[in-house]
Length: 205
Length: 221
Image 1 (spheres, helix red, strand yellow):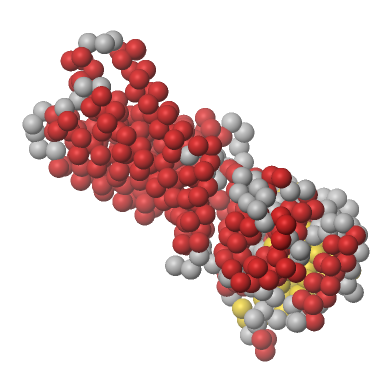
Image 2 (tube, helix red, strand yellow; image 1 turned 60 degrees about the horizontal axis):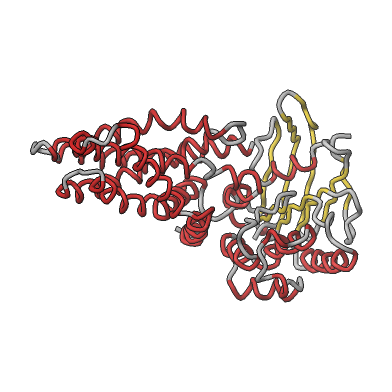
């Protein structure tokens, strides 16, 4: 179980351009951090770097397990974190349930846990529809369902609530609060405030 | 391996369902084989001598066409991020995708290849060998085609680029397979060509996932 993320002196660049440098950020069990910054400041890149998809220019990203033991980065990324980005990775020609079940099993959940997530996010009516027939908000809810269906401690969220309506934003706030209360961590790039108490970190200021 | 089965089932469903799946590849294959007599003339003896070679070459092209977007879709819709963060390493992900493509498109084509060759006038005695060559060569075509698809990720006009990267790599299996078929038709020992083809396929299966994974990581970065 991952208990902490330690980012030290992180610099990221895209092409020739340096996005930010010398970023320090500690995330402990139960912490939520909201990343703020103008468009193109590097919020998404930071999330992708934590997920191991981008190579940092300088600095380190470390993961700790219980009692401060070092967690191998590869293990942490394969088993202990979710990245929910702009692109949901849902195949438009398959049904919502097929895709949700695949994403759940791929990240280590089971069919039963996928059913439970469907209940919680009220996706029942959407399951038989092809993904192409879903609205942006509905697609987002389907892709967020795997956060519940396969429990992992670190959630990296990129504008998670942008397409959601008010009622579902509130419901998602409750899900975030529950995740944090259970010892989880949330690192989210946002423009609107997170619906849970969160530390604000300015990226690329 | 954890996750491999889950991913393989999904990739197979996608490859089978995508735009008609095997039917489309088979239709393309049938078109190429039908065009040959129109282009090369109808003389039966000439067609018969060309038949196994054409059936074999058309197979390589049909495999190539269906492979072009093997990674591109996942790259564009974000699924590649998810696949990179799963329980199996990207090497296994790439292998699962190629294997699923082979089973969904390559294997049906391998069944069709001997039928097409005989329809063009090849001796029915070549059918078993052509089937085995198509099956084994199809594996090499799928894995090497996947390599081209991974290397062309994120580039415009990816389709042409894939062809330019992949066709030279298709040359050895095409030569080995055609050599074996030629030898069989001429009553010569043919096992050498087949063994070379099998060895080439084995090497492609073993090595190309490493390159595909590296290319995907590079594209995601």
